[in-house]
Length: 320
Image (cartoon, rainbow, N blue to C red; front, side, top):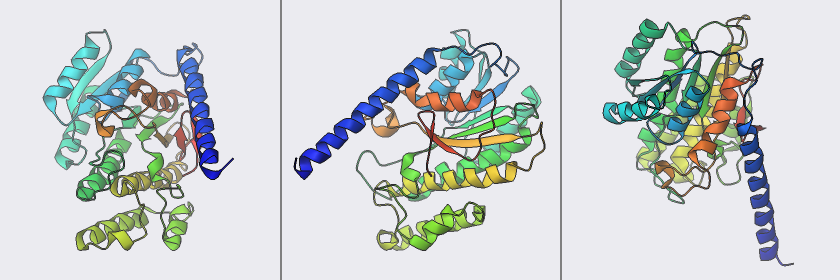
């Protein structure tokens, strides 16, 4: 067997493994939660950002089907209201509120409304995101917007939501939709600067300041045209780095949250939904939005949640 045949055989086996796992997940999704697993009720409040379509809409739908009160948010009021209306007409407890995660005023207005209307929240799903590239494209034309939305915007939303997270025996949950493209040691999208990669891998000394400095350095190199020699990921560069940053921030917060007393715990994780058939991927994905939403629902509703600071795909932990 020559090299080409070996590669083809390897790809075929990988495809078969993915399909088998998809079938396993489909079966798991069909099994209803038993009474003793349900720690939530109609009083449980979840917030989903960027939820007017795609994965966010499906996360909202599936959480609401479990009897949870869900707040569907989107930047655009008209499309958000229409999406919420679709679910409301299905008898689900879904509310809408405008939210733009890169706009401080929008975040503050949203949080004030949530506190007044619901008193707080129990689950936050960070789904809102942006990418200009589709497929193998690798323009960094929109790098600043990508980093500001996917990393800084998500970070601002999490920080604003922390004071709203309600104390409970089960712990509040934060789940962020991320990507395997943000892995430090991915085959195609690794950080090639060995010193920087080691710093970002060092969980004990990892800090928000280091993550911010990394993003600042990248954006400065984009502006002066030197980013191509900066040791950054070679494909989907800006998107990959934005997801790497939010993955790293997840680990920083998990460490910070770990010192919280029982009854005030917040568990935070991130996950890769796979290549989902949505507008962001140009409808080129192999995974349906329903399948892409599954791990977010699973992490949100785990009955004995003691997992924090981890990265998942298809209900399994994967390496950062």
